[in-house]
Amino acid sequence: MTIYVDADACPVKDEIIRVGERHQTEMLFVCDGGLRRPNSQWARLVIVEGKLDAADDWIADHIGAGDVFVTADIPLADRCIKAGAIGIDPRGKLWTQDNIGASLATRNLMTDLRETGAVTSGAKPFGPKDRSSFLDGMERVMRAAAAKKA
Image (tube, rainbow, N blue to C red; front, side):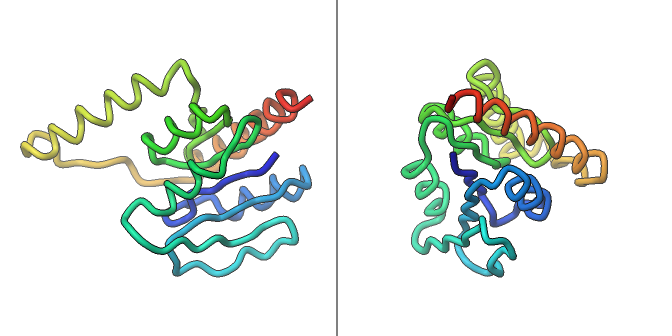
């Protein structure tokens, strides 16, 4: 099992490292540059250059069944789920086969509404409650991934 992190704008990198170290699990922080190497023997920084979604493509190309992913990117979450991985977003929302379709549809609708000017607000600011929800959810994801591997 490996934890893949869509790291460019991830607000829970430190929490991922804590959980990954506790579970002694390899972590790959994938980005397009500008991040420092995570300070953990279990973590590696993967810098992917190229087109806009190069980091997403790299994750989708390397992730597999039983792996774990952390991303707020709904299309990437969909690709990872299709590869058999288990995931969570930085606010603690579990990505599942049951909810990814609705999440994609909502994302696409909101994109269309923003383009027409009907919606101008974005997500609420990330806060301590989100961080706590993430940690709780990440532990559940790690247990589920371990059970899936067994």
